[in-house]
Image (tube, rainbow, N blue to C red; front, side, top):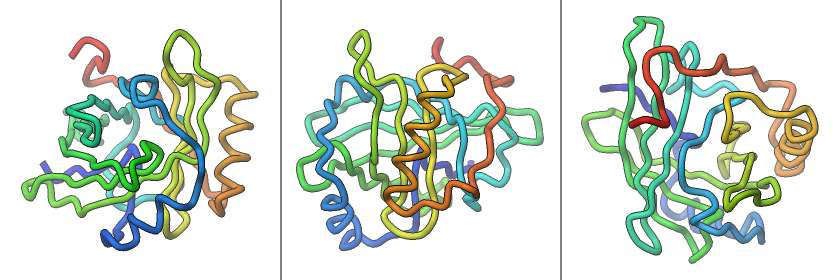
Length: 186
């Protein structure tokens, strides 16, 4: 599969040296257990590796050990079939706020870097929303535990992205929920 979503979500063509620098962009401490699980992409700035995704973009993070996370990114492409890619993320500078994500050679996806700029106050052991960006460029994502996000949470996420230099006027909403798969049952 040639689908490459950062989520995630989250992600850009950066070298390991940039990933090390990215770890210093925020002092935000992320509790791994509160961050792992399924995230719905609410909005994103343009990202070429997501061009085939018409909606239903999700990222699922699973802890492998204290410094490694499995990343599964999926979306609803124009073809109507589910697309996805699986990779691993390494924690940078011992802080879960920054991950260097690598997808397998089959995906065609480059290594990417992922910095959590902000999260919502923990509820029931999970962060309800996250603002994520790349350490270079103007790429950012707003993620939520649900297919929708409250206006207050959206405003807080946009403010966090703006604070780290993402042009929030470039955000476009992602149609949710997924139509070709159920992210919580798999």
